[in-house]
Image (cartoon, rainbow, N blue to C red; front, side):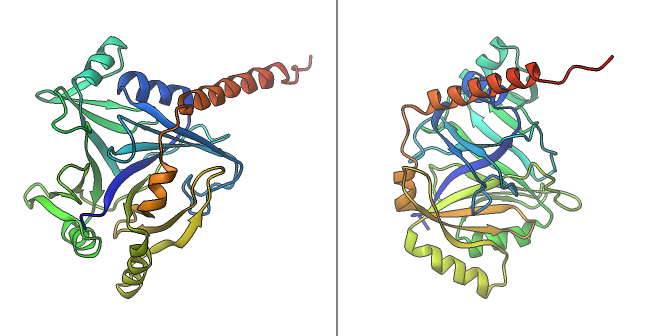
Length: 298
């Protein structure tokens, strides 16, 4: 499974301005590309919403060799309710810690040299105050699971991930497709995994020819397929094929054909400007809406 890659985690965001500040100014990530859509995604990339939305990819470097964040913004929706499903992203960056202190972004030291902070919307990030051990500072994504062994069977035996670490006592395991890629950490919790409305999605790529085999495997194993194999269009960019799965706890998983995705995910030098222009329009629309509010009678 060395040909499979971890790609990104999808977050729903309610405030693009604050969110951009966190990822750009605190974490130090770059805007890799920004895209606007007039209607909901056929694979529910933006959640169960049919209206206008945008996608902003942010990361420390190109998507070819960095794990990044996909920020989906649904116009008109200002907040989402958090569940207990997403437990955090861990990254190694002394610069991010320095940025947070300089900007007075809230930090709390949860272990020696490890600081917890939150992105707008409440999503947790753990910042290790050190230089990254690899070219990509993003080390792992942690998801909650209700039955560790059942989840390991799914992620390792069915999806082909290598188990790097396993601790029965702490009910945690670390998995991945390659040594130099962002890892997936599964953390056992008491009770059910609750996704609420803020639920995200983790994405991986594989050779396009493997997608139909993966779909067949999930059907044979009676596993949940949220979106059968489908082609997704992005205006002016490559069309990609994806399949959306759900693990035993309902975590959404996207597999996309690697060849077309590499074309789609090329960094757009205009990405940051496109986002800034969209946010400026948001501000302008808010101002006009405020000016045009009916005056109170009497």
